[in-house]
Length: 115
Image 1 (cartoon, one colour):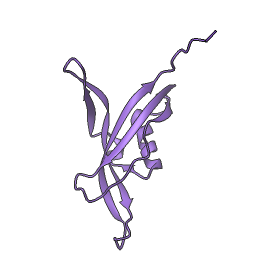
Image 2: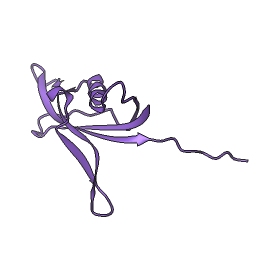
Image 3: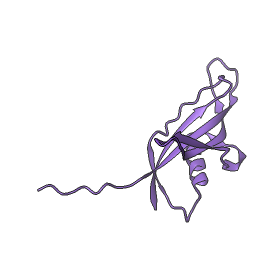
């Protein structure tokens, strides 16, 4: 079993809607023999009210630059949708979002005992 650090951000390309993620530096247990990483992410997002489209399949990778002018893959981009409720709307609207998920593994640090 692995411990993962998950961070999720939502972005609406049309700038019509805003959906704030509460999934910031969330530590989760991941057993790759029981589910895939995409199933885990789909479950975590659904708990927050964001339903992933395309059956939870990622639509792209997320990269960060490395010091040696390379790139490192750090997560996935999904498409998602949720109902947006606003006091100015007569009925809820469906908001479509890019769902940016970065993933890191948490490893326990070996702390030396103090004398």
